[in-house]
Image 1 (cartoon, protein in one colour):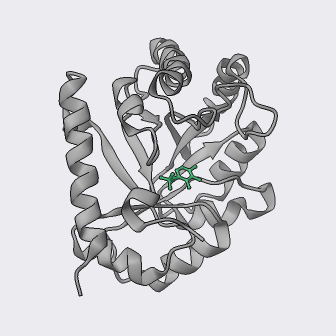
Image 2 (image 1 turned 45 degrees about the vertical axis):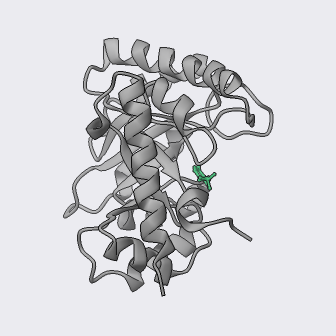
Image 3 (image 1 turned 90 degrees about the horizontal axis):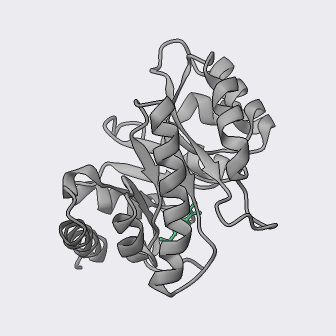
Length: 229
Ligand SMILES: *Cc1c(COP(=O)(O)O)cnc(C)c1O
């Protein structure tokens, strides 16, 4: 049986490379995060066998179960990318390498307190509600600098940058409008925090727009693993 996941990974990598070149960027500065939420562990193993090493999960318990089952694959980097209730923060602090969706001080502080001493600081991104939508997670753009100041003393988390999910649109120019806002906000942050190196934007339907707007991590599920139920 052919491994469609391996083929899909190749074509997404090719797309990333092509978009990077078109945007005058180095493709090596764009990481592909394979979003495996709702997909079986066997799919993750197929991607792993094809050489892929970083996976994103949205639901805490599902993610923790998969991490436990694949404990023997010690070079996987696990990214939590979904909404997080504070009473589940310990599971993220203890099991994941990255957390993309920090949206309040309380979560950052709990992750800092709960990160095990034997592990490296947890890499985190602040999620921005870039189009200020009622239904979307993330902080509003004007709340960002105060939150970053509050987080400066939290040394068990390492703030790497920003994450955003734009208003749904299939039109590239509209996707760009959203992404440009988060790119500008990221540039502002970097003036105060030059160590910020991560802009987590772009999913299966908006990879070209995200790369044109400076994405350093694209989070891709459907284009790798197929449609979810
Ligand atoms: C599901 C999800 C993705 C992947 O979306 P696709 O459209 O399947 O590529 C990326 N980021 C987040 C936060 C998600 O929840």
